Length: 61
Length: 369
View 1 (cartoon, rainbow over the protein chains, first blue to last red):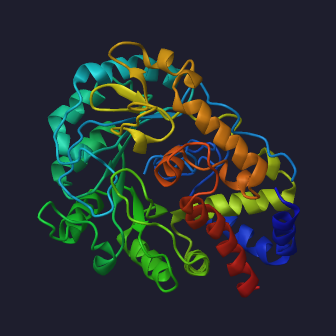
View 2: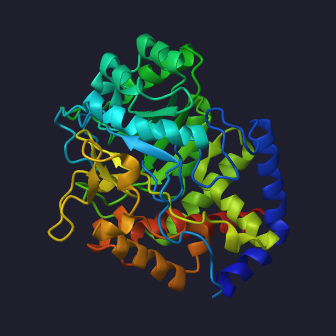
């Protein structure tokens, strides 16, 4: 990663932190936890394995 | 630039396989990339049996999915789709991507009986859905909504895929509000791509695209009930940068994502390449499951002529793009249909759906902060 992009992200730490916490709480509210396998639950630790087939890279549409 | 790990080569074992039960689609969406959507070429059951032989073994080792994709998979009919699904063990997850127009009580019962996970294609409220049309050019919106109503009536949870042709401020909030009302639990937002038979330009004003994504973050933040694919990946990456773990976020290897066409032909990495022909690379296929086991077709991905060129492109992205750790490299089909080859780097799709996405999220927090 370029230093410039990393710097921009780190410079936004103060504003990003509450957003990341909101996202964490939202996942809990949606019962999205690592390893869960029900419909539309993001397998958070498995890049390729997001029902319904929402792969980020080289994904079908 | 620090070296980002991951995405080195192609895994021999996929996490899922995309299956084309029929080439036919009963709609004729303006931006569709599929070349054979007016023809009903159905997958024989022997193709499904051949794929299931390996899929069942992979599912015994870990999570594995079959995605029934089209054409419009429901256009194959319940009896035939059921016959195609039958060879797969219960451990294999079954997913279907549908335009929803054929959904009714009987289909909902079919899905419930088989535990099929459903995703619908809908582009938002009626005026934003105008590109989804019948063969006669008539809007499909009412039929889509009626089909989704059947899912809701049956308590079937569903995801949604939304194509956005004109990403700009004012659109994202309307879309998110619409999908909250629609009741989907997951949303994927695809900025229209120049692929396949869709040759429409996909270059947009970068400021407008960034503003679109920034607005989507704001709308989602006000009521984050929906898992929005693009936002989850952005936030995951941004969190990893703050934690100092972003260089190891990508998977070790690319998933081969084999697409098995109606005739058993296998195309790796980008389903959008299936059905096309190139003077150098032929039909892009890596073989046919009727002639060799799928696992053997995945054993040597570099033997497929275009794959080494694509992998060189991934390495070029790694070496030159600041956003590689976020996206893992441009998709094969985007490279091919935008650049005419696989080893170019940044595409319009990269700009619309990766770079301006991440920058849009950062724009949002800067403004909100």
